[in-house]
Amino acid sequence: MERDQSTENNRREILRIATANFADKGFAGARVDEIAAATATSKRMIYYHFGSKEGLYRAVMREAYRGIRSAELDAGLEDMCPVAALERLTALTFDYHFHHPELVRLVMDENMRHGPHVGAVDEAKNDLVLPRTQALIDRGVAEGSFRAGLDPVDLHMTISALAFYFVSNRYTFRALFDVDLTSEAVAERRKAQVVETVRRYCLAL
Image 1 (cartoon, helix red, strand yellow):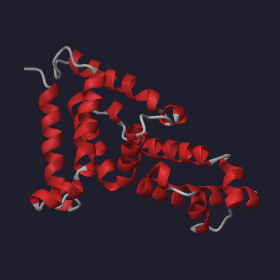
Image 2: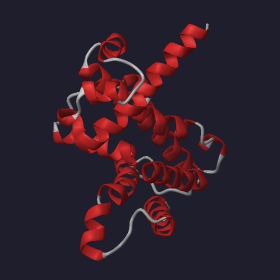
Image 3: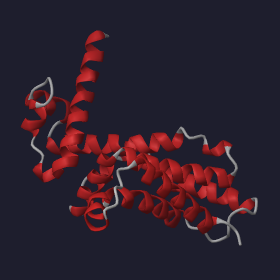
């Protein structure tokens, strides 16, 4: 049992270091030997756990997506009225991206390379996103809170894009407009705007 726990702890440490490495340098720039050197393991053990650099990267992507999906699943949205659930989902998505910039950087790099690995992260529960979004829309329309015709892909894209942009453009915004998007105060103000934007987008007239 102790050996199993040690193996799992070792695997998680590799994933933690690899996540930071891939997020910082991208898939092409990351080196397995550098990841191994930053952990208490060897390059051989990384290949033992993950098979290859690609396998390690897929595991990193899986954990990155699993984090935000788990946060969504644990939010208890089904127990809230539709408007409150929508506001909670939007705020949660914004907060998660803000506090996990590595997710944004990993997704940016994956898109730069035309998404060769993201399809392999099926265990991250991404397949639940659209059905759960549709269920939220259906509840809101049924009670008269949401307008008819909302599309789950559009709604998910809108929420994700507003959260994603705040993190992905933090350095260019600072350089161009002298706005610190890493500031908690700035983030809280922007989050309130994003929640209100999404709420108004969905509300029945």
